[in-house]
Image 1: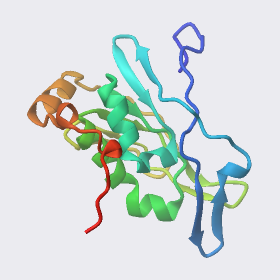
Image 2: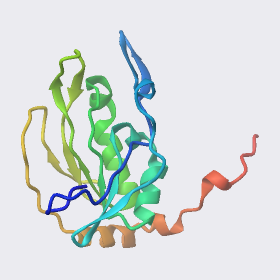
Image 3: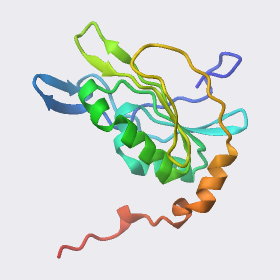
Image 4: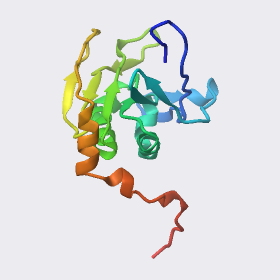
Length: 177
């Protein structure tokens, strides 16, 4: 995150690397060239708290729950989703993360065909804490401004207090039936 003065005020390294085989020759293995991050980041941006994530992280809801419990009101999800996974899952995953956490989700997304032959889905989205899509930028490059009412975070979290009621299920024993 860069301040208005141009200083780096927060840095996040992607926790979940995209190592998948989508079939039909489309295979990715980020772990061959990247190391995963080791910490969560919630940064102050003026009077707001922004939780950081990147792309494939969106498939791990526990990350977003932790960010929201740490005070994040806006969840940033910059991405380069492939076309097949974007068409199938992009909007659903982002809306789910917004609803589950009562947060705004701001997801800038690459679009188009790249030099490597990879094609990305695009459809940058802004989703409100109740799951309503406020912006879908489609599959063409562009710049957009959306005004949000940050009080909607408190409203959503009060109406559906799942964050405050959540138990740490990762620590519970797993019983088999």
